[in-house]
Image (cartoon, rainbow, N blue to C red; front, top):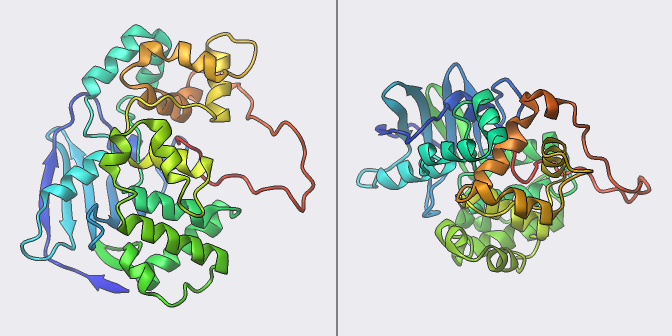
Length: 334
């Protein structure tokens, strides 16, 4: 583990269209901002503290984010002299969907009045992503058959034991190891042997640039997910999660998410949860922001009265306790 207080640099991102750092801080945790992002960060007192591996996978940085009328401001620590700031800024922009056009996204709400109502109930809410496909894949392996709390604890142990601890806005925040750092470890204490093997397989895939965010974002979704499934430990659910929640894709159709299907079915007057065919038809006016819109419904749809009463989906059949898989600790899209 490395502890760092390297000199700081700053950047500002001026969002195109509405954006709320408070909504980003609360993403995936209900109505109030919470302090345990799976991606390695915490939101408190108007400051979003992040610590993550850089896209080049050669090191980690810490970033403290605040927002005012002038934009979203970042204070970056962890870069060595001569290392460029722009890639970190661009990575943060992708993580918070600040690389997209929020004004164009608002036009979806004009074409679909229901989406417009959700936007009004959650002003400035945009998708929040993992720092990179590497970190999303690492989380997928850690969380397999484990609950959220156990997975977060394991992630923190990895970060503090083999990654880097950075001072971010006066608080220590730990970033997970780079693939090289993880592969250099003889053992990963506290993890079953199978998880260790799968983490190493994911790390090797990352070092081979099979988890490059640009390639994942720009490739054909079916081909991208099929390629991800060739990595040991990455199944269909994990491949979809990595694609949707780490690459920055904006217009991939989201199917196979039970809670989204239930909400769409209720909101659009269907007889039950939306099928993939239903979603394909209903989502046509959402282009070119089908992913963003699905995230909006999934994350904030229950703020509308007609969606607030939609029951949580239940498994179609009961499975004996000894074989019952644990619930996925992270939904596909929020």
